[in-house]
Amino acid sequence: MAHRWTPDLKAKDVTDEALFLNRRTLLAGIAGTGLGTALAPPALASEELEPNSWEDITSYNNFYEFGTRKDDPKRYAGALTTKPWSVQITGLVERPGVYDFEDIMKKMTIEERIYRFRCVEAWSMVVPWNGFELADLLDLAGIQSSAKYVAFETLYRPEEMPGQEMFVLDWPYVEGLRLDEALHPLTIMATGIYGRDIPNQNGAPLRLVVPWKYGFKSIKSIVKITLTDKEPPTSWNIANPREYGFYSNVNPEVDHPRWSQASERPLGGGLFARRIPTLMFNGYAEEVGDLYKGMNLRKFI
Image (cartoon, rainbow, N blue to C red):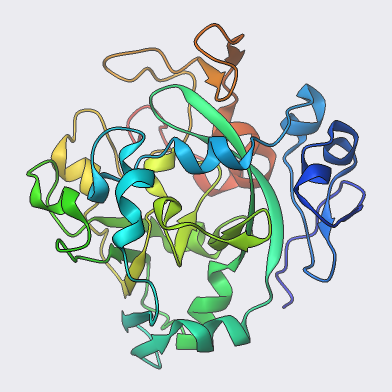
């Protein structure tokens, strides 16, 4: 994989969750034994941020298909059937079709990466994801030269996802990226956390993670991917275009209409946890800033 991301931080073996939570391990950078690369942005090392606990990551979730409260996904997502699972890849690709999840996993190189994950509501967490580059999955289907965007769609199964019975959003949930964003080596399809299979409430068995964007861009339980030459609709932009744009890059200089985005509260420290400054592109400006060179980042939010 010639485009495989290579971190600048030094590698150190990890065997279990306890080592992930060790500050010295994080500062050194982490490479999972036999799983390849771990990745942390410079901000994580310089600010000595630690990965959140399994309990934090799996108990405080936005997954409206199971309800609007943060604890609803953990309470209700156990009803979701994730085996068997398949992903339809269609549109401007050379090999459209339905791809079995287990077959996909056999072809992918699984990596462990530590990403800061920021929610638009101004809280953040640090998650050790397991997954593979989205670019590698798209390579399986073959990208046609006319493709400019990648659209994603979540499973629609209201009998197992009770939130889909509510008129909170138009279902199924849809999301999109520009093709160069999708092919960036930081963009992954996550299949696990802390080396374990990803729990249902976090988007099992396959979810998008784009670490320089707000968390709502990370569509969960994906069943369809479409390559297209037109900017695809996205669920939150459809629901409230005044507040949620297509790009949804983390930008502390642009306030949400209802709150400032200049600082964030790390999850796990309680309501009185020290707020920290929000970094441009969530701390990944050096890696992804060139994608938006010349763009008005106040207009294209």
